[in-house]
Image (cartoon, rainbow, N blue to C red; front, side, top):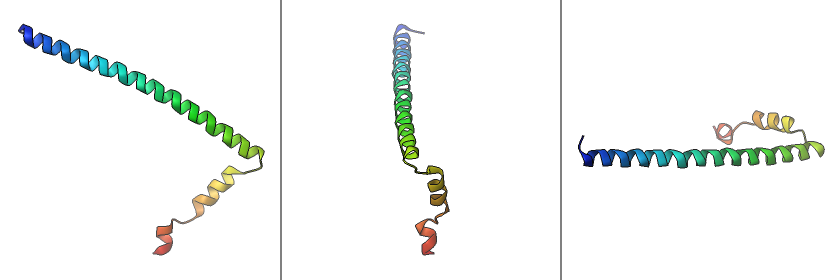
Length: 73
C-alpha cells in the first residue's frame, strides 16, 4: 500500500472513530434525557393518583372508544 492510500485509510479510520465517539456521547445524553422525562411523568402520575384520578380506568375507557374513522364507515 502506498503512502497516499495509507493516509487516506488513516483519515477514514479517524473520521469513523470520531463519529462513534460523538454518537456514543449523544446516546448517553439521550438516555439521561429519557430518565428525566420518566421522572417527571412519574411525578405527575403520583400527583393525579393523590388527587383521586384513576389513570388505569381512564386508559381502559379510552381504549374502548372506536376511532373516528371506524364510526364514519
